[in-house]
Length: 267
Image (cartoon, rainbow, N blue to C red; front, side):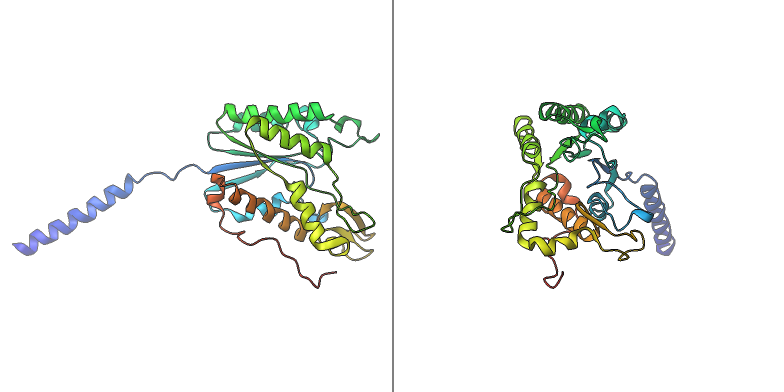
């Protein structure tokens, strides 16, 4: 009798377990992080490599609870990103708890006859940033501002020069006024460049000699855009800053605990 009772209890236990499993709670929705910006952030592939935007390695440092959508595009300013209807679909897709990481400036400040549409005066630049912030907050998403990453520029005494003075200042002012977290990538990248010096910073950029890389047989001397090494170091700066600022997104970082370092023997 006891044996039969025990068997029935075991069966009930199994059935109860199966029933509980069938009613298990669904996984929480992923946090989506939208990256909007320019060529220093965006995706590259194929014949464009080793050109690398910092958004590419950045996406590798999060757990499965985070999804990164890199919407950055080369050559875009705040003005053209909006004018080309790149922002509105993102704003419409935002959900509570999502993030928008915003880094423009390189093209906003550029007065070039080839692309006059890109130039955005500082007051307009600030207004576009405020527009991104307001649209994100309407959806209860979290905007994060990022100052434009520094270009590689040194004076004759080897001092790393500021290359985005007005536009970086504008980002910081908007962040303070609207109580938005700001990652000062301009300053922090410049500090990194100063640490490395004129020669060693070449290892971070698209600085290729003739025939050095099959995708660039004529070489490329570029003090704005980064190779994979440079992009990873920029991503590391941003990841560390998310942690320092105790932004909730940092709880999902699974790598990226180390400060950017370089091989001291690098050229």
